[in-house]
Image 1 (cartoon, rainbow, N blue to C red):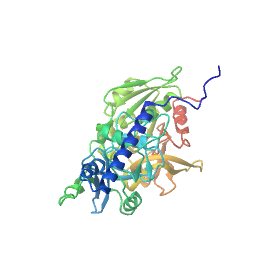
Image 2 (cartoon, rainbow, N blue to C red; image 1 turned 90 degrees about the horizontal axis):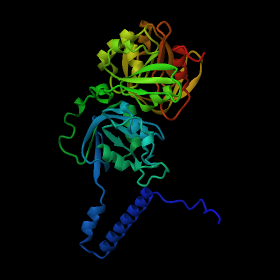
Image 3 (cartoon, rainbow, N blue to C red; image 1 turned 120 degrees about the horizontal axis):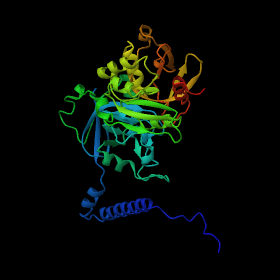
Image 4 (cartoon, helix red, strand yellow; image 1 turned 135 degrees about the vertical axis):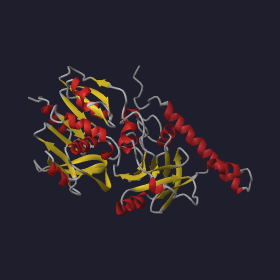
Length: 407
């Protein structure tokens, strides 16, 4: 007997449920239209069942955008930022660096391959609110485990869609990052206290408070201590792929405890918030500098620079997305990078340190990386571990070289 045709594959239960849900919604809508045409008063109830609730996003400058509610219903306040990535929304929603922020997706359709848990960047979701032009109600992907609306409800995230995200992004680009609030209705005191909102205790809120160990597939060639300021899964993965046994420790681990473990190298992870808030972390890094090879990414890059006497600045609207061009001042090459940060190190202040400016953003010439040749350390502002552009994964190999590898 011949084998069954491969085109007739069993349908996933989740797919069937979505089909049934769609049919039910269509039937409900068709019944409401039929009753309305007949003037039946029962249609009022049906209209309520299929109605979509309004929502509003109110900006600190007084601008108001009307949209529709999805995800958790209610209010949300946060620092309003935008990300330009055409994909990667799952990473955005699970990236600890977005702690305390309301995120605008500039790409007009979000959620078309659903929610895929193996693509998560961390255990949780840290955004305060989520803004999209349109979300995909019926995602299609062989790994899909749910839709965007259900995920936001599960994580307690207030969302708004149907918003003119182009205009909203233009406001942020022209005026700079500002606070905003998503609300179900407009009231007289909607702006009250909005300007006072601040993101505080960001690193403390996202760092794991327990030590964990990630082992490589084969023999461990190096032992790395990763200080978790808001680390993402891929950092451990990229190091493990290169033969590193990675011990992840909480953000407030003492330098003495780290050095007592005698690692081959120390990695300073990414994380959210204002780097200046982390005074104790900076003091501990000062005790580590020059003792072991150090590699810092994103917030870790900023903290390493501050520990060496540099200064930080806040960018007008930050760098968020998967298409940020970065120039290597030593090699003269330009790379496309993934980034997510609102603060940067003042390039002029690096002259006061033992560091040398290595990378700059090709759009605004802001600092994107620093070398510390006399301290056996270096750092980058961009995210070489992030899904998307792979241009800069070589910086992990450079860290291996600092630890005496790649001979």
